Length: 360
Ligand code: PMP
Image (tube, rainbow, N blue to C red; front, side, top):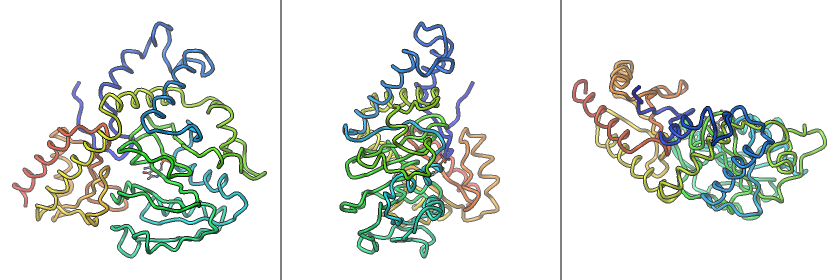
């Protein structure tokens, strides 16, 4: 067996010690004689696993008591609908900031349920910048303000948290959650698909302030009502048990690494190294404004796009996997989530330098 450095944008690399522990416990979880996959979600063993995972996350991210932590399904994409269905509270309009493909999708879905005010957009820069908050046209009567702290495809990341006063701030943190300390109290609601920095696909995390739960209208299916899940401890129906368990192991692994501040330091170093190399080369190019370059997803193009295929082939041979850019933008993309070791970034840079020497 040989593991590669996997630069996939998600599902993405998981920490190796976590996978090893999963393997160790796979057939017999701590003397129960069964796999976590085979356990009743209402049994003592799984309830303990679930509670421990939540406690671990709360400690890691400093999530206060008055926030609910929900372990849901349906992906971040379902949250594009659940957010308006639950948070409009009779207001009929919401503010959205558009910084790329995922914001655009969230906006499109929200338009099914309410009037969307696009308070700011970086479309004119082809989504390579973030409009400064001074330019946002926020509506004081909006039910909430939605933004995407990290655009996974464009590689554009907020390195600051917007200030929306009393209007709840909602963040799609799918591709940046747990990459750095989380100032939970600045948000009304945070959501994230698990398959990047949390664990296996199939689990969606929602962190929501208590007072924002319980406002879904009468036509909202009960399974799309945050209250249903909050009241049932995310066990209104069978939750994604295995993914929940693995997420708990990932949270512990992050703690063992020194917590979110240590993750941030490492992630910043990894990303800065790669950007410095790209900027120092005439062969590779990243189009994003340096002030808002993502630590998690680094898109780049080759000066000679006809070499893309050869680049990817050689990378795969060197144990560098899944560097192909998103189909909508082409080029390359290196995703550097928490589980990507610094050695993986070093190996990528070495390979890129060598490729440039041969073809540049
Ligand atoms: N938002 C962002 C920022 C994402 O990166 C993704 C997935 N790549 C999604 C939403 C959609 O997530 P899911 O596939 O879990 O629905």
